[in-house]
Length: 173
Image (cartoon, rainbow, N blue to C red):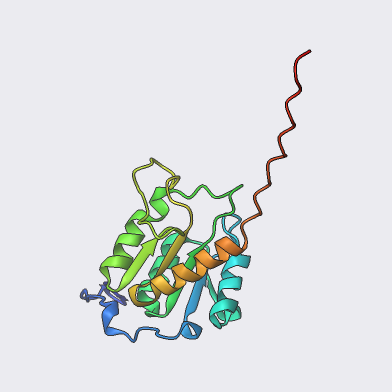
């Protein structure tokens, strides 16, 4: 990272998130959200905060994807981003995530997956259509967050309608 000084750019310094204190208790996580975005269900982020015991009201709300990743790189290892897609709107663009995810993971201790725990698939073209949702978290709590998200997905899944009973066959006359 190169800070900006009065006379221009200052010397570069490496960012190593591993040096920071990792969140161990989920109540200590800090959500980085985009409450203004119509492409994500912010209610699900607030629900996850309730489940973890974290304070969603203290979430940092940033609209730009790039700035959310930057906030997570610079903000500390307790920062978590959950993007639960609004299926009628969510068409996230690859350029909003590819470079920023690389910087986040290369800065140390960060992990990014979709809501199924799969790496984000950047091979589908302009849109992230092969990945559903996004979890960005420190690698030591990512699995816990993923587990809670999967519990939420199962709990919120609409019941499968039962097929109507088959009618008895009518004998031909």
